[in-house]
Image (cartoon, rainbow, N blue to C red; front, side, top):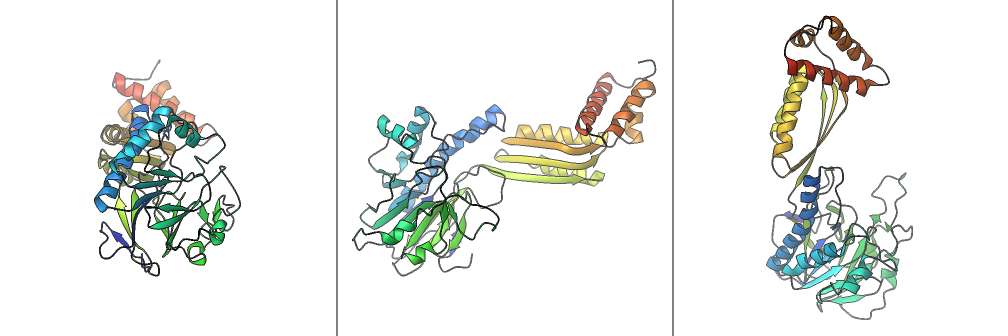
Amino acid sequence: VAVAGALLKNGTIRGSILISLLHTADWQIGRVFSQFEPDDAAALFEARFAVVERLASIATEQSVDAVLVAGDVFDAQTVTEKTIRRLFNAMGGFTGAWVLMPGNHDAALAESVWTHACRLGAIPANVIVCLEPKPVVVAGKFTLLPAPLTQRHTYADLTEWFSTDASGDALPRIGLAHGSVQGILSEDIDSANPIAAGRAQGVGLVYLALGDWHGTKCVDDRTWYAGTPETDRFKANDSGQALLVSIESVGAPPVVVAMPTGKFRWRQIEQHLAVDSDVDGLVDMLNSAGSDDVLQVRVSGTCNLAGHRKLIAALGAARANARAVVWDSTELRLEPTEDDILGLRADGFVGEVLQDLRAEQNGAEAELARDAMLALARILDAHGPRSGAGA
């Protein structure tokens, strides 16, 4: 990204630094991954605690002044006491200042996950939770202007108060907000929790740390989305990292360094099958799956029975090798070849049924017909070559 505050991959911040920050967001601790099998969902759930531990290690290694978490610390207001306590335990590796702010998933309601955490006495002394829009001096180095959400959705810009801040100190000012910067999404999308474009420059912020996007994104040279530190969706948006921010002077744009933090790689594979080589290509992709891969595979087009056997064998291996695989073949049509049918020795009545099911894939019950054809083929395979006459 060619901006004044350049994004340096895997770099370190050097030189004279006025303020050093680790910017992160969208932890969504306690998220339940119900679309996956139970053991996979459990591993993805645990990964969100592990990445907080990695963030604490990075903050310590880089000697940052503070870690800023721009909303959606928790996934829901109803997370358990155990989850709340585990989150604050995971933060223990960094003893400097942590600044947490509610987002749309964990808004600062009258009764919320935050009031629960306060009653438990679970929030450590070095953790600042911003439940109100008022200035907070952090580490004696800067004044933080937070815009916490007090309800899940609002259509007012909660960062407007930044322009009327009357804190009176002479410290550099940094904003913290959770929502959608105007002008980024398509005009026909009605975005909740809006943030005015140019807010940082308009009110003299040295940096505006944002959450809600789930991917790393530079809005302007003083405004960034950090993204979630552990990828949680099938979308190519530069997630799975945090931002190391160096502010060398009030007048200079910050230097922003992307720090890889995530463990799992979420990959979406969409393959349209038409010829045998398409099947072989998809098999190769499935065979390349590693233990940190989370795959969503969508298959469409046509495939013969021999090709389908290859796919199912590769899918079984991928499910054993990868962390998780979500398979969707609802748009795949089976086209048995004459060799397929001869190989099954499905003559007579059984052969007629197989041909009928093949034709019914053009109708309203296409998926049912395809599944029935597969079931019949599996039965014939299991019992070996046999005649369908008199069955």
